[in-house]
Image (cartoon, rainbow, N blue to C red; front, top):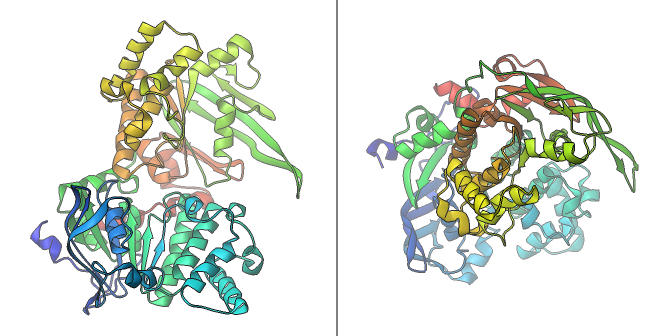
Length: 556
């Protein structure tokens, strides 16, 4: 690590709008020295040093495999499987937790150290009421008395921003939105008033506006309680917005650290420079297509209604008079938070849902009314790429069989020609032909998404509908996939409809943008026009929520 990176420290008096920096020259609350961790015989952390001072907010950033989660698991003494500490020390105040046995660690977890994990859908028990799950944490800390525990549960939920907490404490996790479930995890983490709060990718699965709400609330609670925050993320923009110091990890080592202004304004390590260049919010607008042709996809007054059963039965209008166009050879992004109608529109355009009214045309052919041979022809011209490449790929099939599935379904070619077509498609998405006989679990997330793109290209479509196709990927892998999509568009003349909640990605890849809210289009235009001069407050709110945007502009 460069010598001056060691000396970078937060300083008081940050610029207006930038994170307030707390300086504490006392002993660190958490001190990690020369930490080494191995899984079996393979060392994965190579002498990590980290100090987190009382009241400080520190972010650990890096791509998947950089060692972030392993470091946190070591601090909590929860290394999975064959993971074990082989050297170094971990101190929480004066306690050597690196060498502590389970009897010492049990009260530390949840008591002195709280954890907000990444995915509330897998970290909350679906069969338990949320209030009972918070109550379990309180009982583990020694709290007694049913009425006292109930009152504390309601107070914690209220503090976490959950309305009608007394009533909602008796509900189950599936009755809450993703953002509300994340608030419950925050309530659990803060229930016993820990000294150190570790937030491990706490908002990566949330819409950008909900993400901002959660992070704002988390910051308020941390400030109110004087809690020290260790924030783990792959998103440099989020880290820049929310913390006093950024620690950059790569391949199990700390390669750089410093204040956000220093990291963004004068990165020393080549890897940090790559992270900054790859972060959509920290890069410039894409160059608009200047020679785009006529519209290939035309949506006019599209309405989609669903019957709602049970309590509150009636009709839900998920898409309400939606109109836009996609010009041939360009990318149009449809943005908005969850519930805005983005995915409903995508499903209609893929022929998976019939519109209630209105029209959707692909090169003049109506999607909703097409039947027989015309319907099959349209489906060959419009292909999807979904958000989760692991969930959308058959885990029991080889990559070759996954990619050639559309060819088999449409009766294209014989076995030999399909094998050659798969090899060509793997070349197009920059995967080695040797992966053809592997299965999805043997590939990385980025490789799996390349497979999903190859499958979408098998029938030589004209339009790809990409539904949150990069939101589950690390920023560097995300950048690689976006670059691949741009290259394919240039070489094959593809048109993209890019469904996303992230305006940072939009500015990176799209030519035009359609902003949706509650089933309607509230704004549309070129990306440059919408970013430079948004007409609607909702669009301005989305733009303001792009992580790292303000700090990037301040240090530019």
